[in-house]
Every structure is written in structure tokens, then in C-alpha cells.
Length: 326
Ligand code: PMV
Figure 1 (cartoon, rainbow, N blue to C red):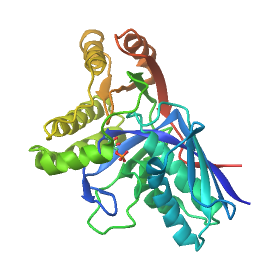
Figure 2 (figure 1 turned 45 degrees about the vertical axis):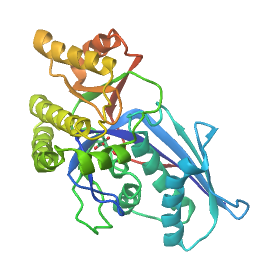
Figure 3 (figure 1 turned 180 degrees about the vertical axis):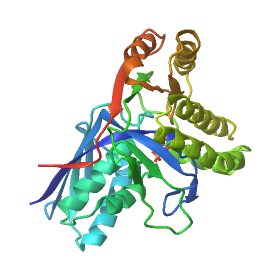
């Protein structure tokens, strides 16, 4: 039986990736640094069989149409080529959190898929190879292969083997990511098209490329020193620069909603009025993710829960890398 099941966790970038240096190979134009998070998991089973005439995909038991299965098939094709097989596959994936809404489901999804598919095909890949395989589908997925604090350097054109690297394990620092979920629906503009529109049309794209490595270095040094203020300030600058770049595109891309702005204000107020070390980040979706020390998480969680338009709050902590399940 050519079958395997893997679990991976979402990751949230503290220093953002936005923009590609090589579209064909899906290489990031800037370095990024992320935190892999529990309990945001994707569990994916892959079965290759001569009984299947095409690849099929279900996410949370919903059958996906041919278009949304394309990216899965592209990863499976790379695995099939590597393993020397032609069998089609059935892929069943379950997320423990909203899909395709800016909560990094593509990161955990493609990390779990890379691990399950390669194992089902009989390949035994190490973490760097798994990370490169996942990265070719979704650059952020390269980071979900590893636990805790993870880096992904910018890729040079043609650098097909680029993979993420572990910076520190999950137990390096007692921080929390408190996630204010502001919508359960799918986002309008996916990250791939959002960053391409930014690259092609935003007058701030060059400025973003120039400055993102500096935010990355600052976050990296701050994480090493477990300095929440240093990490937080650079993290906020990274996210606001990314969103400003996207917003200035034509047509404008805005992931921020009224509830996003209210939640951002709550984070600022907690800093100003309660002197809490809490800082915000957002991805290609309307949710606000607040980074703070574990001791402050309950206060941050409560304040965000009471914010208008916040549907629910998830408290996430540094999590494990990808795992093959028995
Ligand atoms: O890898 P993708 O296509 O899911 O893009 C991720 C982009 C951001 O989430 C906005 C930033 C990041 O570094 O995760």
C-alpha cells in the first residue's frame, strides 16, 4: 500500500516574505523569519494507487475542483518524477483552523503534503529536501517543515534547492501568538497574485526589496536575544511595509478590514496603557496576530476577544516541525 499521513503546523512570519525573485521556481525575493505554531495543524493523507485515473483532493471532507487541485498535482508530479512512478493519488487534508484566509493554511498544507506524498511514494527525504519540495509550491511552506523559529533566505534566480533552516527550536523562547480571527471566509486575493501585482505595479516594491533584509536581520537578532521589544518593533515595520506595498498596487490590494484596524488599536493601547510587550503582525488576510510573552497572553487574549468584529481568538505557541504519523 503506497500510503502515508503527515502533520504540519502553520507558521506566521515575524519578518515577512512578499515578492518572488524567480516565478518558475517560486523563489522568495527577500529573506523571512517565522514561528511555527501549535495548535494550527494540517493533517494530510496521500495514497498512490493504480485504481485512480486522476489526482483528487479533499480539504475538510469537501471535494476540491480541478482548478484548486492543480497546485497539489504540481507537487505530486515532482514527487512522482523523483520516485520514478506515474500512479495518481488521492489526497485528503484536514485543517484545524480556517482555510485560505490568511492563517497560513497553505504553509501547513504544502508542508504536510510534501512529507506525506514523498513518504507514500517510497522516498526518504531529509528535512532540507522536504523543505525545498514544499517551497516550490508555497515559499512559506518551506518554513513549516521545521519547529520553532525558522529562516528562509532570499533565493537567487535558478536556485532550485533553496530550503528553510532551523534557527531555534520551539523551547527557545516562551512567547505566544494570540490570533484574532476576524473572518471565517476565504480571502479575495491570494498571496501569489497579491505579491505579483505588487511586484509589477507598486511604486513601493523597490523600497520593500531594499528594506526587508534589514527588518529580517533586526528580527533575527532580537529573537536570538529574546528581546520582545526589538523583535516587535521590527516585526510591525515588516508587516506594515508589506501591506503598504500591496495597498499602493494597481489595483490596490488591501487585506485589512475594519475589525483588523480595531484589533491593531487594541494592541497599541495595551502597549501604551498597560506597558505590555505586545506587537502585531498581519498576512494576506484580515486577521491580527499579536506576539507577546506567555505571561501576558491571557490579558492580550481577553482584550482581543472583546474587540468588535473579532469572531474568536486562538492562543498559539511555538510548535513542532512536520511529523510522519503512524
Ligand atoms: O508562501 P505563500 O504564497 O503562502 O505566501 C506567504 C506570504 C505571507 O504570509 C504574507 C508572508 C510570509 O512570509 O508568510
